[in-house]
Image (cartoon, rainbow, N blue to C red; front, side, top):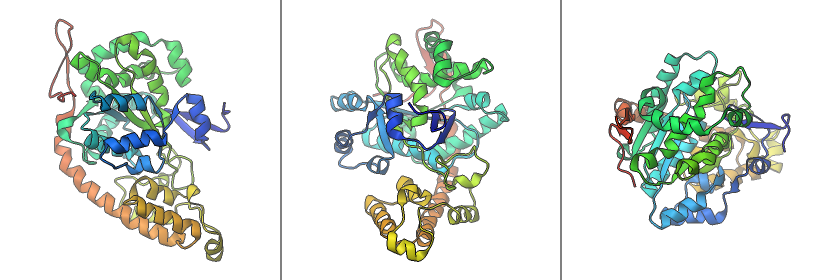
Length: 395
């Protein structure tokens, strides 16, 4: 087991040089094998999302069973979430880029959870009004990626609590404090909101099954740091009569300054490219980004660079290479020394600027309709099930 000094990966803290093989062993997850990727490719019409093809998603729980059920006609739904504490950066889009693609390829309903309550409970210095405001702004960013509004719904925790709470009550009764304390390392001084939160994060995993009155499988693309929440969810799922949610885990993308994770919690926001960054800010950040290049041009031409430790190569890998051919060309040029770091930065800068400009337009286009996708409601007076506005036709 890794020691605290080597690396830490929890929903509330990620630090150190992460050994992903050891992390899989520690968490008890499975490799995302070529055979599973082939299953996805076949069912997606011969395509594979770059995040899958380039190894950014590397681990899973029960993905094979979910794909097998889908092959037999039992379709699944998708779920992922965002804790709103500020503007989104490009790394925040990883699960939602994949979810949008899976929604399109598998005709899957999508549930997004905006956890404005959780961020208020766990992040010092944020008011509830701020997390609510950031929640609406983040939601517009996510919907701008192109989700089908007819097949997408949103749990905005403080807005959706009437609809969520009856199911959260059932979940909460199955989770004892010793489990939460053990999984998340909470101390006696932790506020009870954060202790209760796992019950709320479990609700979307079970919601369609509860709403429809039959078992509907759930697939959750997320960062590996979120796995502890869903280990608790999976442990209690069958006792409540629901399928265990399957998970797809991504690695943690490196920050521009060479930190192991692109994060908003460091000393400098230069570590990430935010979706609301101005063009000059983006240019400065990329110009100053840490690369895997050599000390001199001559040395790089002779020895080549090391893309795996380069934050700019990570941008190409995660989002900004248009296709695998371009990504392979950038990688080969980097390794051979043919592509120098300054030229690489100039190329990716154009791609990032174009994306941010187009994204801002799409965000404004969806902002007015975003709230119409938020689930609100409550339970029937006889306790027989939920009454909500505008639920998705379920598979």
